Amino acid sequence: TVVAEDLRQVEALMGTLEARSVLGLAEVGLSEEEGDEAGPMLPDAENALSPPLPRPRSLPRADDRRIFRITAIHNRFDESHNDSTSGGYRDLSISVEVGWVMQEGLVSFERVRDWEANECQRHICEIQVH
Image (cartoon, one colour):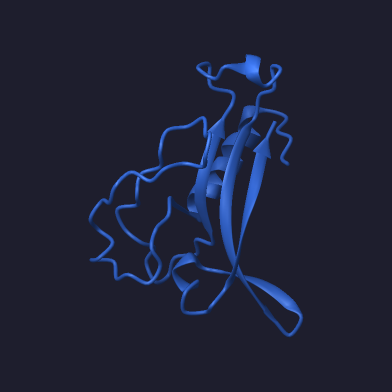
């Protein structure tokens, strides 16, 4: 959980996620040419409050350092959110998938493009901004 004291902190968090993430359920292991065509809209998590996520137009380049795959975004700050069903609770919830390997007792996060080749373990984390 991230407790943001002001909008600058939220903006910094979002900038970091944008720089280090792949949006949607990009397939791993395709060449950049194979990933250039936009695929269908992908459904968000069940009962999500946000619209479906678009399939990425291209995959990360070889020098890319993106380690997160954003799988869902729930924006309960949005004015269209019906807060009567949540007792007035508001937050921004971002689900990110990470791939990791353990070597010599240490965990290291792997780039999204390397998940299949490195046979990574995967875990989905939820980042909440209040």
